Length: 228
Image 1 (tube, rainbow, N blue to C red):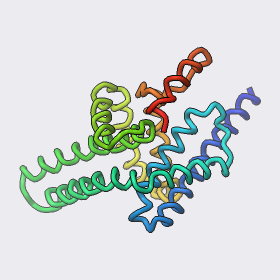
Image 2 (tube, rainbow, N blue to C red):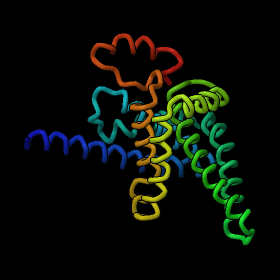
Image 3 (cartoon, one colour):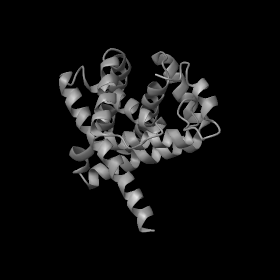
Image 4 (cartoon, one colour):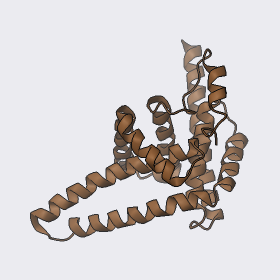
């Protein structure tokens, strides 16, 4: 029993270390791109790093291995991630502004109802965005293809959508309750759980961890557009 506990604790510590290194890499690479250019490639690289770790048979990643995977993914995504991320960011700004207008200004009953609808819309949009970056890390396709695939996933994988919706809500609540989580792990922590949820419940080709019997067949399947 003690041996099993020690092995499990070691694995847990290695996962925490990988998340912490990914968070530091996220901050450094975002600053390398002067935030405006580096932010979305860093988000994309975070998803790609976790996807790569998820599919790796050996989860005992070193600091150097985590950093190397992140850096390579960041360089590859400098252009594509910005084209994919900035339209999402602009829509986020519009939703947040609309919510601020209807929630913090006296507009009567209609204003409160509109604020509730907007809040639900923001949660659903958060679900879409978190899932879309996971799809983009997995499929080497255009932005419109990723958007369509994400919408299909939201409808066709209700368990995955439900878990991601709960994750979005819990993340916001956790950040508000324990503000120290933000400087300690930033977005690296929720993104890790997003990849775990998609990997377990999404049934996405190329993100399903192979069993011993399915490994040869899955390697053939993931040599196409599913590998990025």
